[in-house]
Image (tube, rainbow, N blue to C red):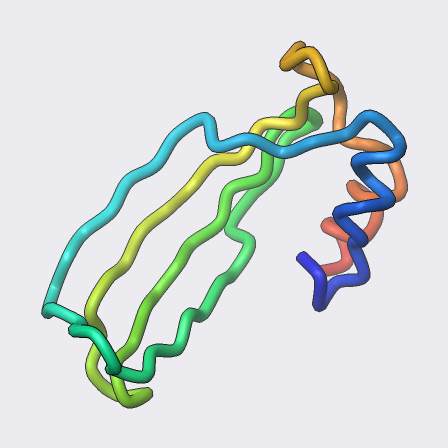
Length: 95
């Protein structure tokens, strides 16, 4: 999200946090200590309350080790669901 221009500290100041609501993961190959890994993340969908991310983790940039999806829900400091701010949704619509 940083690459899209979202500043987590600024969102936090605006009482906007994202928490993991769902996670699905599939392990393909092991990664070990001292392996250099690359994590690729794409946004695959969003609603007024959630953002869904797809992840792939590669070892040495070629061997896929893990794939997964995470649905992050937008909440306030008290953990109550809230709508994703309009400016965030506008950026997501352009991606």
